[in-house]
Amino acid sequence: MHTIDWVDGAVELIDQTALPGRLTVLRLDTVEDLVAAIQRLAVRGAPALGVAGALGVALAAYRAGDVAADVRRLETARPTAVNLARGVRRAAAKLPQGADAVLAEALAVRDEEIAASAAMATLGADLLAELCGQRPRLLTHCNTGALAAVVGGTALGAILELHRRDALGGVLASETRPLLQGARLTAWELGRAGVPYRVAVDGAGPFLMARGEVDGVVLGADRICANGDVVNKIGTYAHALGARRAGIPFVVVAPESTVDPETASGAQVEIEDRGAAEVLSYGHSAGEDGPADAVNPAFDVTPYELVTAIVTERRVIRLDRGERV
Ligand code: MRU
Image (cartoon, rainbow, N blue to C red):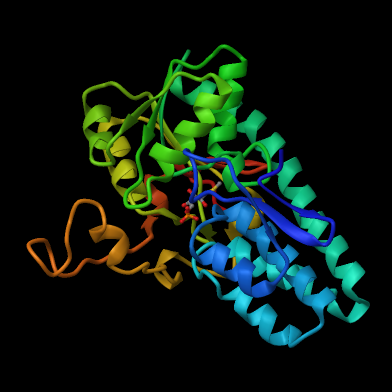
């Protein structure tokens, strides 16, 4: 099953806000509905967002309303993952050739992500086996599986490949506050794949590394900058610091579509702020007895110096050996 696809003239996607409780497929045939789905994280994860953006342009092209405004809305629906704007621009470049050409380009974006996921699983598993020893115990953060792509995934794809090789020692899924992509989505995917795992609160990661219970950290990215800085889900930076302190590898698995040579470093990336409600809605009552306000950066920047290696579908970049993006 594809997380997102074009089915009979509309975009169909798994509603990730309903997981793990319910597996629901949404059918969206307007740009407004797709933008809303992107913004409430019904579809999320950098590769899936690229596909969503590209398919959204196909919706706009067939509907032929204010296509330029639709393209702008899609492009800016979320600011941090480079895949979204990139997928939108790729499909929009075909607008002069008509809606069918736009759809063909959007489906090419989808197919490239599917192929990239397969290649990253192999390359990522090979590298993790080399860097982290036999049957490594791996910590991952957020969700980087099929739900974040189309099928397969990035970092979780590599973990699943190690499992298929019977070469995985264990998985810690960092819960990923505030929306729990790790505890809800990564756990759901690992469970369906029959991979034993444990969920840990985000703050436990660096301590478990210090206690010698983790052999490597592997996670994805929303944008990889020209200097190698990695922009990813909030909490990533803390895991990178923990990994460096513990002397274990910190590996990023992401497709070339997430590599952004036009952005010099993480300092130039707009970090989505998702507002106080997501942070305060778990066990707090805003403005009454609980805290009145919150800050909610959805992503952080891990400086390239803390990254051991980046794996894409085409290459392994050993930042620890001075190789550069
Ligand atoms: O806010 P989200 O859930 O879209 O954030 C997703 C992440 O940060 C993922 O780690 C990243 O997109 C890599 S997905 C393969």
